[in-house]
Amino acid sequence: MTQTVKKCIVPVVISILLGFTALANCQTAFATEATGEDVIKHAKAGILYEATTGTVLCEKNADMQLPMASMTKVMTAILVLEQNPDLTGELTVNKNAVRHYYCSYMVPQQHLLAGETISFEECMKYLLIPSGNEAATAFAFALCDSFSDFVAMMNEKAKALGCENTNFKDPVGLSSSDHYTTPRDMVKICEYAMQFDKFREIVCQESGSVPASNMRDQGFDYYTTNRVKFPDDRYESPYAPYVTGVKTGYTPAAGWCFSGCMEKDGLVWYSVVMGGDELDNGDGRILQGDFIDTIALYNLTEGLTADDLKKPISPLLIAGIAAAVIAAAFIVFIVMKRKKARQRC
Image (cartoon, rainbow, N blue to C red; front, side):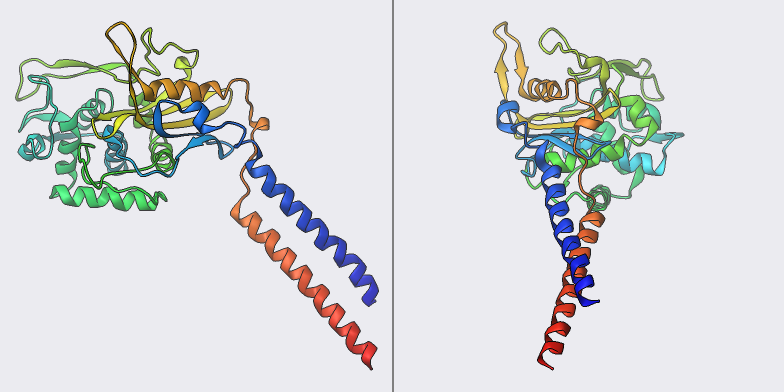
């Protein structure tokens, strides 16, 4: 009986170990085919992630902590949408929301005014399409009693989403110190935000307008800064029709930043490029490194299907395999120990 048990268990142990090794190799095989340094040439860091299979296709410094500029506003939008997913009702712009201390870089005559009443939906459009700074601070003071309370909510949500290398200091993205995220964390934030219907609807729009209000006789128009989805001749690519968002960002400290989402051939790709360079186009216009590198990342997806991508190993599966190996080894140990004991007798 002992020999029978032994003969059955040993092959099982060997098979489990070989299977575990094969699965571990399978997890990383495809992801390492594209080298981040070769693709992300004009930015400090970036990542390309496919959501339906959980595959990281390409990355460069994906865990580097960097300022994210106005990509910050994705988290601002999340906090608003969690409380008001349909963006119903109106808010009144707090006078502190337009103070230079909290909010700067506003275009003269084209910004929200203290005491102005605006709908939540119009304010969200102004936040996400042209990246209106005072829309972010208006939301902060509308949802919380103080600016610091809203920032605390942002950091709490980041932790809840599993962002281990993210810290917010404001809802806008203008803070120059201790305000950072990583490409990997930004993917988590964007993937969560895209679950809200209103967010998805807004971030793929090209333009909009702030309407007339109790504080202004006429509204003003605004336009997106997303040149991957709405390219001019500098950024033309076959992927523009498939891009569904998400958010741009720029400050001198952060460089050019872009988080994108592309849905194509049944796959959902999230890209984040941070710390993009500013390049000379040769015609008096600049080239943004974040857009150039994002398009280069999307080139990697050409022709890929879900079957081509290696699904990541579930932590539960890894734990189960490890437990099975340990249990089988323990049984073999006990069987062999008892056999030796009987032989001594």
